[in-house]
Length: 192
Image 1 (spheres, rainbow, N blue to C red):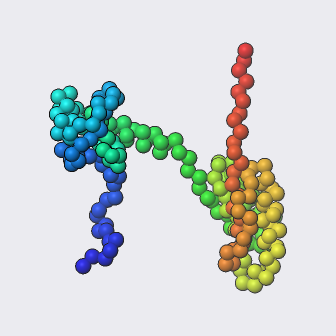
Image 2: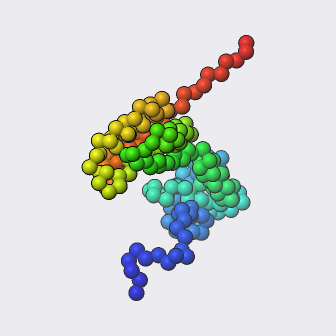
Image 3: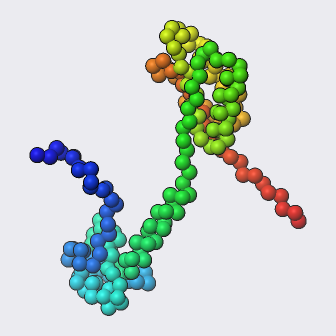
């Protein structure tokens, strides 16, 4: 007996495919021609005949409409263009990562400067930086030291980023998230 919602590991979740040709099971469809012209509402069999005459496919593009909208087109070319658009969209999207730096309340000056350079580099690259002060043992009693340390980080990175999440205590960690400032477009001076 299968559990509800159980899906064997070998099943892939894919995007719903467009129904084409004989897979369209509704009696009537609104048809759009190969050149984008409105043909009107036809019986599905008649729309299939028209598509075959042009040696093209009848593709359901809006299945939820009443009646469903179908277009006469080359399905292979349509799929190729969809994949290309999806690839281009994926390539153009920017992925912002949250990079974390952990420090202790008794941090030395050199160690602080070293961690500060990391945070500045993360913000310069457009990523978010999470600065966490990790309290060990009874250090948690001196929460004010951690808050001062995070305030120092905020002041030292003021030109690179802004505070997205104010310092908050999560267990034995006091953390704050910094986000990069938007990059200003550099004006290029053209030699005219």
